[in-house]
Image (cartoon, rainbow, N blue to C red):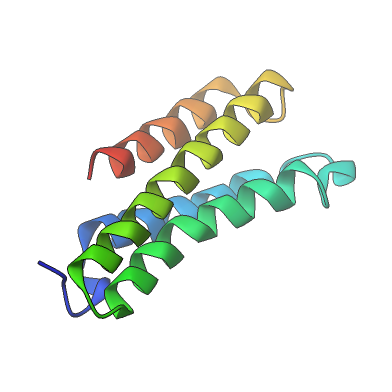
Length: 109
């Protein structure tokens, strides 16, 4: 069943929280990453919540499910980019673990 209001969905709320966290953490990336990894990871994080919301605005449950699958794909994209950021030593381990755990929570929703 397709929900009427995306703001009521726990997955959307978690995705918004993740997005804010990604913005904060990616602001710590080196300046030369402003148009590279920082921009890419921010876009993928925004895409998670945005696709959930867009799916709610669509007319059918099938369309909603399609946009949820796009959101899931964006969450894997975001996770991959944060792994790279960690491997490039742009993030410390504690912050990286936190963001990966939050991303995986969303993937389970």
